[in-house]
Image (cartoon, rainbow, N blue to C red; front, side, top):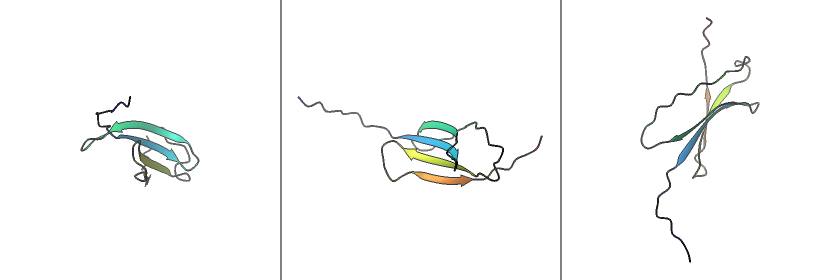
Length: 78
């Protein structure tokens, strides 16, 4: 007997923050309907100027939609 699943699967997106040295700085899962605002706290490495940080957006249901964006940070001394 073959079972049919009638529920449509919602796409889950993974937002990862990392560097080129394969350090994972942040990870967040999101279900995006139309628009979403996310907050993510990450610990930036001491060598942020020599080792740039990237944000990766990956879908769990589709291939070829992955995005990678280099981000720039302004560090304020306290």
